[in-house]
Length: 144
Image 1 (tube, rainbow, N blue to C red):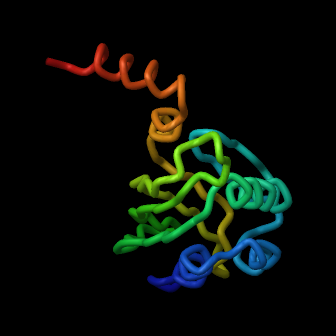
Image 2 (tube, rainbow, N blue to C red):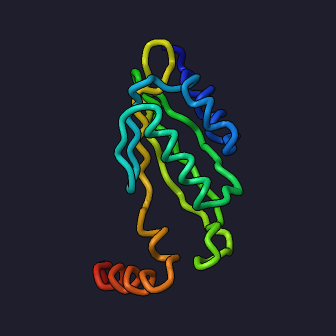
C-alpha cells in the first residue's frame, strides 16, 4: 500500500458538500464500517445516511485534517470540525470539535473501516437544558 493511500479519501472529506455524498463509493468499500460516538453502521448506504443527517443538522464551516500517520494498512489522523447548528432552537454561534480518526484501508486504497474519536458530550453541552446537566456532571466527575 502507498504511504499516502488515504489522501484521496481525506481530500474528499475536507471538501465534502451535501451534493458530493453520492461519491462516497469511490473511496469506500461497499461494506464499509463507520463508527463515531453516535453511530455504528455497516455498509456504504448507512454511512451515506450518517453524512446526509449531519448536513441536515449542521452547517459545516470547515473540516481540517492534520498530519495523517500511516502504520501498515491503517491511517491515523487528527482533525477539527467547525460547524453551526441549523435548528433555530439550538445555539447558532460557530463551535469547533477536535477529533481523531482511524482508517483501515484495503490493498487498493479503499476505506474499509472509519472510526471517529471525539467528545460526543460537546454536542450535548451546547443543547439547551441538557447542556446544563452535562456541564454539571463533567464538573462533578473532574478530578480536583
